[in-house]
Structures are given as structure tokens and as C-alpha cells.
Amino acid sequence: MKIEQSELKDLKAVVKLTIEPADYQEEVAKQLKQVRQKAQMPGFRPGMVPAGLVKKMYGKGILADVLNKLVGEHLNKHIEDNKLQILGEPLPNDAETKNIDLDHEDTFTFAFDIAVAPEFDAKLTAKNKLPEYTIEATDEMINKQIEAYTNRFGEYIPEDKEKGTKAEVKPCKVDAELFAKVYGPDAPKDEKAFRARVKEDIVRSLGEESKYRFGIDAKAAVLKKMEKVEFPEDFLKRWVLATNEKMTQEELDKDFPKMIEELKWHLAKDQLMKEYNINVEKDEVEAFAKRIAKMQFMQYGLMNIEEEHLTNYAQEMLKQENQLRSIVERVVEDKIFEALKGVAKIEPKTVSQEDFDKLFK
View 1 (cartoon, rainbow, N blue to C red):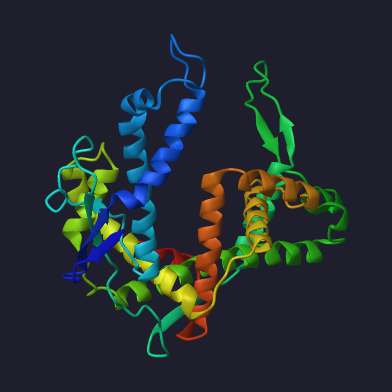
View 2 (view 1 turned 180 degrees about the horizontal axis):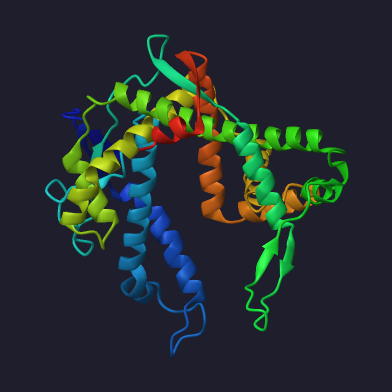
């Protein structure tokens, strides 16, 4: 088989594959033999249908399948052998591809357009300043959280139409019974320790918010370094339309800037993973899933979830392909952001919850 690639121009090139009889005849003959052994046709015993008749009936389809397989395998091998970081997938180049005549020709040429990723440097340095926020955990936050617990575990008083009263919840007392309902067997023994425990939970939750914000700022800094990186947009638009039949040109034009930003971040992550030798292990994915599960339960005031239940809940999450993919991506990004924290100049900032919230407006 002969493979040729044109010179890269504007990050694009054409790859031509020429397939000759020696590349496919043996495989076609093998498959025709297998078909003949299983073929059943009136007037012939099983396996005794004339080879010529089998070839006439099935030969063209088998040849087409073999050619498609050869093209796919050798095109992928060419990309791998030449370490090409292609964008999207190769697209057929109709202008460079000869009309395929399976009846009268035995040598076939296929041409494909490819596009490769541009060169860029997504790494941050000490010249890049990144804020790291610590959100103050105030007494007001602690009081509000305790109030939420007293309401959640309070006494339900039903509606009394005769007395004209509405259904309500009577808050419970802040005592050992409440402490046990919130934290289970290892609950604090007195109100001071209870408040301290509540504060720990709030600080942990605020830490997650701060970590999320750091990720936003770190990602923005990386994309800032890539803002002048250019892409073969005509190829990418053609590829998007070819792989999304329901998408209109109008929708593509509207969404394309966002697609380019997502592509930049995808390429940047690949580069940074290699730069910082980042790998994702199974136990890290499982631990992250348990962390998500625990946070979800905490949102409903369920602080004392048994480890076994958390593990089972997390495992069910990971059985869903979309959930698994999302969690792996988040683990990757967390590790990238942690790596960037070690090379950029970090500027610690302590802020109130109100001021922190303004960062998102």
C-alpha cells in the first residue's frame, strides 16, 4: 500500500492511500471461501454453491468491506506513526479521490483531509498571579445552620381547622438529642462542641467553594495564554456539520466560539497532564465519587452517613457512563489546578461570603 501526505499548510494536509490487488486479494478470497461454506441456495448442497456464483453475488460487498477496513487501519497507523495530533477526524476529500469502480478497476485511491493541532504553551509560571480565597466562617453562618437543624428535626404540628391554625414545624431544642440526630453516635457532648463541629462543616463547605473558584481563575489564566492561538476553522466547521447531522449552519455559527474555547481547554489539559505527569487512578475516581455523594447528603442535613452506604452510592454513580466520564474529567482538572498552584504566584485573600459571591456576577 502506498501512503502519501501533502505538506502541512495552515495546519491542514491531504493524505492519499493507494490500495493495490496484493493488499486485499488474499483477505477477499478468504471471506468468499467462508461465505461459500455457509451458503445455501436451491439446487445446491450446503457448501457446494459454485465459487463463481458466490463471487458474483457477494464479491463486490466483501471487497468494499475489506477496502474500508484497510483504509481505516492504515490511515490510523499513518497518524500514529507520524505522531500527528489531529483535530476531529479525517474527512473524505472528494476532489482528490478517484471514482471507485469495483467492477472494472483493481487499484483504488482514497484521499482524506486532516487538520492538526497548533503549537502553543499552556504552562503557567511565577509571572502568572492567581488569587486563592479563604471565605470567612462567621457566627451568623453557624447560627443559621443550627437554626436549619432545629427546624429540620423539629416537631410537626398539623393543621387544626377548628382552631384556625396552619400546619407548622416547631423547632427542637439545641440539646444532646439534636446533636445525636445531626452527627450520630460520635456527636458532640455539649453546645460549645456542637457549634465547633458545625463550624468545621461550614469551613469545609466554603473550602470547596474556594477550590471551585480557584479552578475558574486558573483555567482563565491558561486560556489567556492561548487567546492568540489560531485553528483551521473551516475544517473544524466542516467536521462538526459532518458529525452532527441535525445541526444547522446558523446554530454552528452561534456556538462555534464556545466550541473553540472548549477545544483550547481540551488541548491545554492534554499538554499539562504530560507536563506534570498526571495520571488518574481508579481509587482516586472512587474517592471523588464518594466525596460528591457525601456533599449531596449534607445538602439535606444528613451528616452521619455510614461509610458502606457512601461507597455503594458512589459505585452506582460510577456505573453511569456520563457520570463516570464527568468525574474522571473533574479529577483530572483538580490535579491540573493543584499542579498550577505549585508554579504560579498565589495571592491569598480572605473575603466575606458576600464579597466572594460577587466574583460570580
